[in-house]
Length: 171
Image (cartoon, rainbow, N blue to C red; front, side, top):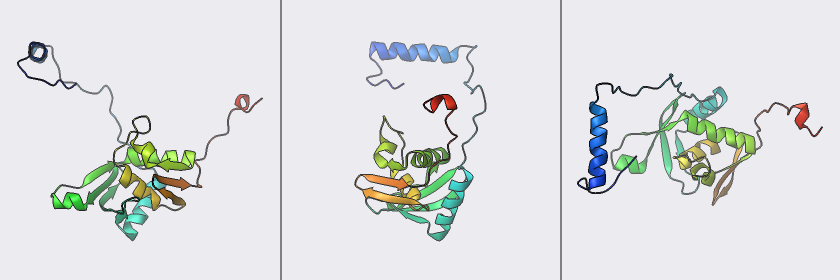
C-alpha cells in the first residue's frame, strides 16, 4: 500500500503511529511464506531452442524498432539481457524470468498468435519486457513475425492437448 501526502497530516500520522505500534508488539513476527515456492524453470524444449539461438547470435533485435538486446547469460531460471541504453547508464543486465517466457510461449502455442499488446495489457498477460520476449520467441523455429505494427507473432506449432471428454464433444 502506498500513502502519499505530508507526513504531518493527521490521517497519515495516525496510520504511521498504528503501524509502528504493531511492529513494536512483542507478538509480532516476520512474515514467512506458508510453503516453499519453487522457482519456475524454462521447459526443456524452450530452453534448448533459446540456448541454440544464443549460441548462434547472442544479440536479439526488437521486432518493431530493431534495437539490440544482448544476452549476457541464459539459465533455466531465465535470461539476462543488456541494451545499449543500459550500457550508457552503466546499469546491470536485466533479468527476464523463465515464467514470463514460458507463459508467452504457451499462449503462442495454444492460440497460434501472440501480440506484444497482449503481453503488456493489464487485461492481458500484464508482462514487462514484452519487446525482449517477442524478440526471443521470433527467432525460434516455426515462429514467424506476422506484423511489426502491432508486433504479432504466429506459429503453426500447437500445444498437444488431451482430447475433450466424451461428455463435451457434443454428445
